[in-house]
Image 1 (tube, helix red, strand yellow):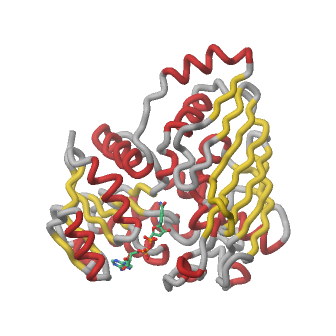
Image 2 (cartoon, rainbow, N blue to C red):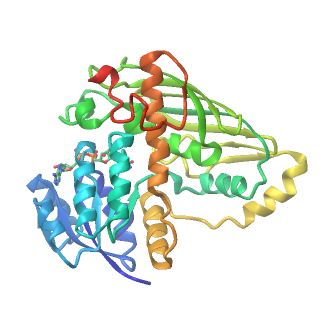
Image 3 (cartoon, rainbow, N blue to C red):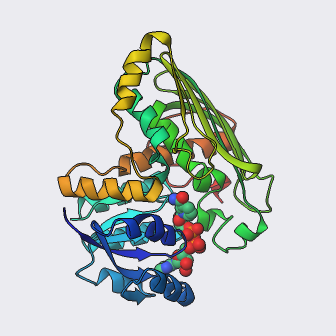
Length: 356
Ligand SMILES: NC(=O)c1ccc[n+]([C@@H]2O[C@H](COP(=O)([O-])OP(=O)(O)OC[C@H]3O[C@@H](n4cnc5c(N)ncnc54)[C@H](O)[C@@H]3O)[C@@H](O)[C@H]2O)c1
């Protein structure tokens, strides 16, 4: 087992990577550096997690030869230059969602990864929950049968205090709204269980907050396997919930309602009488995982040690960004959009509505 050194850059959600993840995985990772432009945050978080080096300079982080992994938790608009620079410096990169702001930018990251000793792992920590893992295991084992339909809801609450942070609420800096920042997780989980998407017909609206980006969205999807999905998301729900329900020929899965950990149990798994024995036997073999960041970082360390593909890859980021590109294009044109999105697509280089 290799113990790798880490620099955490951006200490908002970066603090949760420390708290849930690295603090519980000291045999796997040693956090050597904290980096943030905000000196107070740097001191508070640096002290709380006894991080030996603190800096406001990302370049200084990249110049440290003993740092193996750069964990980028800064606002979305700086992800691309930071990922490219870190890969150029030969570092492994972990980066928060949304990875970058277009499929064109994603292609740049793919090229930079190919040219580097380092790798990139996007964050999609909601997959690490024992409920979702059970469903994934049954689907991957080929036991679920024909997929029929799914419903997916992201019903959260965000108001003026949340959007007072200057980078939020604007296409130039947040890169999108509820689709990009909040529902991106559960839509990734949907595609893990039922993807890829063939056609998406979407609508977006800004109805809850006075912001530029959307805070309500709804869509119908036809998946490549023929299943039909309806999904919606809002930042105006009391109480907050996340929920997904997926009906397959042999089994129906229903998640719990925990808004920020919809992968966690309790999930309800209801097999058909004919599939009951096989599904129950498969469920007994599912290996429990630690939730969220701890689970994803643990799987990451295991993959690096074994030289296996990372638990979340740029292919996963591509699928997620393709869905968002299609969503904005459909919302803008009023037309259904077929996937995949190619470089010839009008929103390949930017999905900002009406060229904003
Ligand atoms: N995976 C999740 O569940 C989850 C949850 C929240 C946020 N996020 C994502 O994490 C990212 C950050 O969001 P947040 O809510 O933590 O934002 P935030 O504004 O609370 O924190 C970002 C931090 O980055 C620092 N920063 C900005 N530019 C920097 C630079 N050039 N060098 C060093 N530090 C810099 C800021 O000073 C700030 O402290 C976003 O992409 C967001 O979508 C993911």
